[in-house]
Length: 82
Image 1 (cartoon, rainbow, N blue to C red):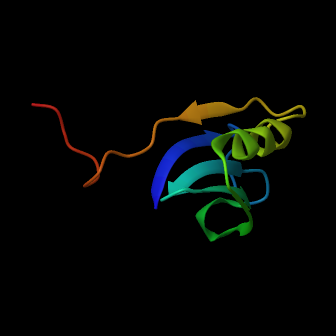
Image 2: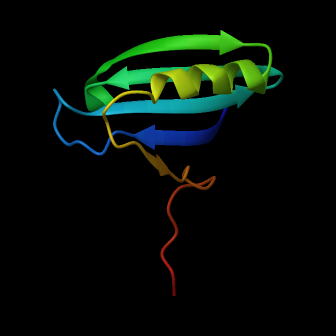
Image 3: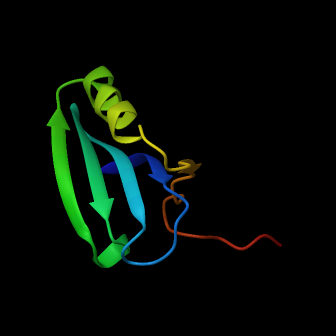
């Protein structure tokens, strides 16, 4: 499964943090809505097309939070610059 995009609501702390992830696995698209950081609770959605998945992402990003798109990690993790 490849992570394509990640959004964060800009808030720190287990009670306030929310994340939304867009991932693809073959021809299936997956959206994860997570509350509470890495140890939090997630809801998962699965779609046949990127359009359907992106529609769900747009709906999840509605509201008063200031969402920030974060870049996915490159394969192999972080690499320091020389």
